[in-house]
Picture 1 (cartoon, one colour):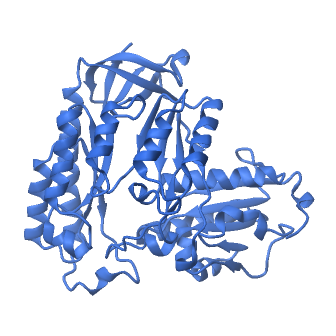
Picture 2 (cartoon, rainbow, N blue to C red; picture 1 turned 45 degrees about the horizontal axis):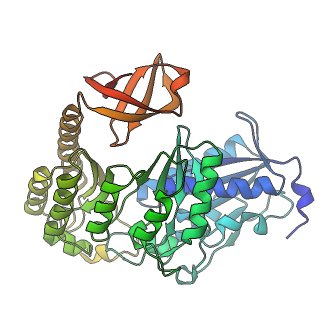
Picture 3 (cartoon, one colour; picture 1 turned 90 degrees about the horizontal axis):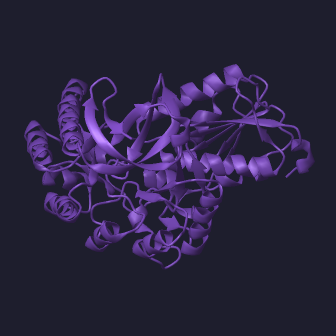
Length: 437
């Protein structure tokens, strides 16, 4: 590695695609470069180094990654270009073939970028540094602030599940995590920076504990004791790992929000088996009913994939009817994309694009109906909202503890402050509820 004094007075720009975990990791990369003397480029300024953190969850994500890389190179023709993330781990040679890319780093290397930099001069040929997926073992804690008011704390990485449709275990390696002690320190640092809300992120966060022989509930209890954090949210957690103990804890917690997000993926047990998921619809229904019994005002988001191989018309209709019967708040609908190397490609029945589109629309319409009903059910309630920095026109927005999006007239004194309000009427134009401050 070259003497880091060459980095002084250099600037960097960062580009992130994909999940909140990627954003947290890009933030960690930025801090590492800053500690080496590389500052963030101002908006509109051509940077000396550009870091692009990619996603590869679908073929569309790969396409967006290629487009982003070419756009960055076009806008920063003399910059040293580093590409990392899931796309870089899965298809490094494809990225290396893009003219203007200087360095491609895999999952094991991306949070130690400085070790792979030299004098930041452009290369005639891309350098590729990756590790075999089964050798990826390191865990580097990451925390980032979004452009609103919340922070994203990475608590876990990787996955051991190997679902038939998914490439994440190949892109991120096996399940691993940080220690509770280190993660508590990061939460305390968020408090010193003025953060009020922390979202726990990871690939399979309910699997927390492999590395440190600790448990996810132990982590939640430790974080709940950190003074100064107004609220935590648990990001997507597998239904088989969302124990009744965790649900009971959230119900009694001082700081964990009544907000759950679970991937269902399919409402047909036959399709769940084809996907190699680790639960059935009966378990999923139990989790929904358990939450609503003790936290009737809780927000429940659900992930669903449409058009996977093997999803016949009958299976889809069975799944749609099951999903409609659940007391959830919102669906996140994803269209299945063929991924090289996955077991799903061995399933004979493939769904045509037009049918996928129709199924997606049907579930999105259902989601709109459920979300509006949930919002309306909260009218008149007193809720605590954390208003965001952003504004559109004369309105400002924020979310309640149970994830109702509220709008009110812009008032800078409310920014990043938890305020108790009354939930007013639904605003069709904003697609929010009005906050009566």
